[in-house]
Length: 162
Image: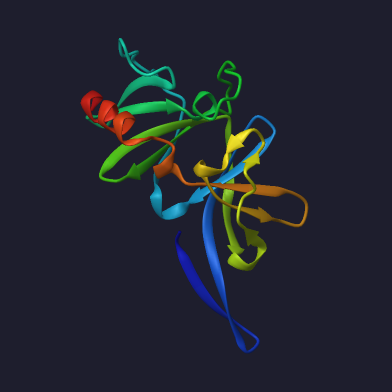
């Protein structure tokens, strides 16, 4: 996670910077340093025999990038894309991948002290995809580990697409 340390009184406070987004009613956050860009929905080319959670590929300024429907990958019900749907383009272990999310909210800077390890299951999502849960004043933010969203075989399949 991207971290900044601030002087607060006499102690140093550990700050995490995140991009927050929604899938359904749940709010998620990912490390801002992994995010390359956020794009509006664009035309996605379907790839035959791709894994079910792979929506297809997009041409992003001359680069072919696989796009994963994060909703499907997390075991949530697939819905039609809306005007708020976005593709978050991230760098994962030397691989650029797009993740479709329902909407992007904001960039957050939160103290690490308000996060705690995730329970076994949060919002029906397995804990191995999660790094932490942050307790904000009025809501919970689920911190995702995008590198664990794909296993090594799936990562290889994606490499073959780009």
